[in-house]
Image 1 (spheres, rainbow, N blue to C red):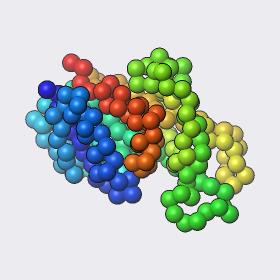
Image 2 (cartoon, rainbow, N blue to C red):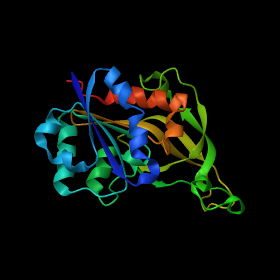
Image 3 (tube, rainbow, N blue to C red):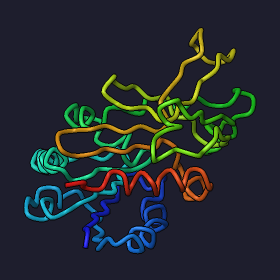
Length: 231
């Protein structure tokens, strides 16, 4: 039986417990023995990490100890899969450049509504946008058969490198109240090969409601299976 490790915590605004609970039955139905941890301390347990086939992380911001991060990176390099969504993987451990290198992309911002529409809650950053499947994505097992689709939630602006394989993108348009002067395209779904391991990231997932979207949920479920140890 394959082993999955769910690590959750950090900023509670992303509801890491409720969000990851959505996928526990899926993992179990697909043959995973699932262990859930509320702390990254487990990453420093070399024996546990070596026996883990897939890590699902949902830890927004927060910090990580040096031995924990070294354990995570070593495990992925040795073949453990690493997967997640939104800030739980793409906005974790902002003070660690080594973590950023592992993931390949980092949340920078989520542009907001026109100032006169701002009401002072999370919805200020909910914008309608389109997730566009790339040519690579149309052939990839994670996103094959999924057409471009619309969401109204946080539209992540991501800083990234060229070692990621982008399966879907979104474009931030020019608006009068924002400072940029031409449209900016950001990755929405990507994969990354790191040593013997696989990394999967999807930026939608601000709330369980977004994760319940049929397209988002399908992409996350396929991404979890894709990332799991292959050898």
